[in-house]
Length: 485
Image (cartoon, rainbow, N blue to C red; front, side, top):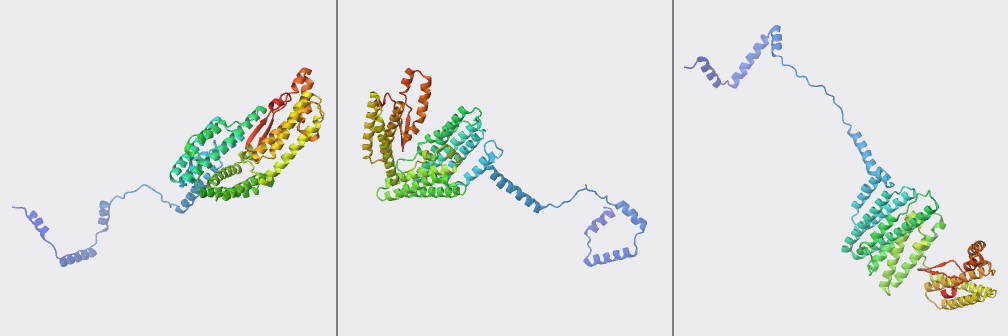
């Protein structure tokens, strides 16, 4: 049999008090505890025995996060890195600490934000102009090293290739827009190449005159531009010009840009320095007016005229925006003046009158010539000048008229030099133009023997005469003037 205690425990597990019994038992126990509290000694002993040890934590500090101050400082820092530093970096040149920010952040960000293909071509062209301007600045300060020059040349190739690639993509979308973009790009490259080659000539001249000159030729950059111009045939404007409306839109855009630049320059530049620019702007306006009058009768001719206008406006824009180009290229070389019919007629009269007066002077002075051989040559020159004057009166083309005038004028000047060598007193108007030659001859006569002197009297310096759209060089000597004619 099981023990009694086990049976009692088992039985007790199965016995449950009712709710009323539990309440009554609780009340009796609480009542007993109130009237029979434990002694103080038992409380202390009980507390010391049952006391739970207190766990101590490591010391720590609390602090408040200043979210407002953090936001303010973050905003200032963001403005510094995103606004101030990129703005300052725009003035950086190769070698400066912020140049990488300018090229790799500012310009690349703008490239990313440019979505129109035509605008991408213009932006790559502007980046190319920036690199060349930086090279000019370094050269003017004597800091254009071979490494920096090579970097600029490579950047020119990259930007040119990017522009030409965008033009190729644009050609698939809009053939006319691609052709206009190619014309503008090639005109800019041509102008920059001519400018850099002009700077190179000046630098070589200065280096031969001054040992301490720090300016270096920029042949490498000019060569890179020339390579970029001749690489892809697709970038060259096609033989068939774009549509008249699109050409006119581009012309209007360029002329608006020219007058904006002119208005800005009038505030800072003297009026006399802008006379040539204003004259070119007037020539462009006349060319546009001529194209608008021609389009009704021959649209193809009008389109070719507008292509020429775009090239001229592009050159003028670069000329006005690139100060170093102004210093190295004469505006007449860059954009020759287009004479009006009235101006051409006035020049015809002036040049004819001038040449007639020179011929009259030769006639008056020829009577003083005693040497029969020189007399024959002078008479032959007179006949040639008279014949040229007759032809000049019948020539309609102003360009041909200028060429004939320059040749006859050069011949007359050679005759004056011969007469001067013959010790014939020339009029003041003529002696001024031959004074340099006279001084040279006197110096030679003082140091040479009579035999050498007689040989040197036959030497006459070369006279070069320039005409619109062409250059005529006339080189005549006293001993071979007849053969040259």
